[in-house]
Length: 190
Ligand code: AMP
Ligand code: MG
Image 1 (cartoon, helix red, strand yellow):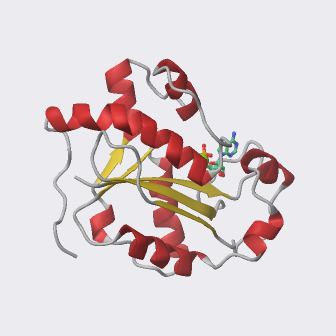
Image 2: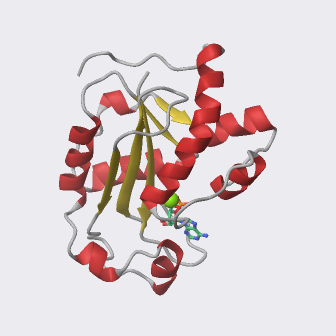
């Protein structure tokens, strides 16, 4: 199976976790051609937010994404279609750390009148899987890497770096899921 590990960054404010107010500003993703293989291709793109175009100081500090990065980026619709193109033909399964990224994708698709592809629905929540395997419920990615004895690389809260780090955890979790028959059924055609 081919796995797409992705991570979104979004507009944010201190003490606010309102997904309808937040808006995607980066899609980072890597591809695993096999569950235990090191990642092959990478996707990394900033997105220009429309609802609240000015990034808060909190957001710039958290993500290290600069106002100029998003100001010169394309809007969500274009980048989302580029992402779909980059993924290529089924079969594949999207994986992310927790449920947030899928929720934000759906909110932004609806905000930007972009259809959310049905083949994206078979999603693996690696955080949940990590909780089951390591008995560490609701564990952040950084903590999970440390529990698994892996080092965090790059800048935490940058989509592409988070995706690379999550892929290392996926290399441990996905093979277990494959051997225990826990990989969801996915469409094999568009
Ligand atoms: P992450 O993938 O952990 O970098 O988080 C994805 C997005 O969630 C970030 O780009 C922020 O929009 C939001 N976020 C993460 N951590 C926080 C936090 N401590 N406070 C507010 N928003 C956050
Ligand atoms: Mg992230």
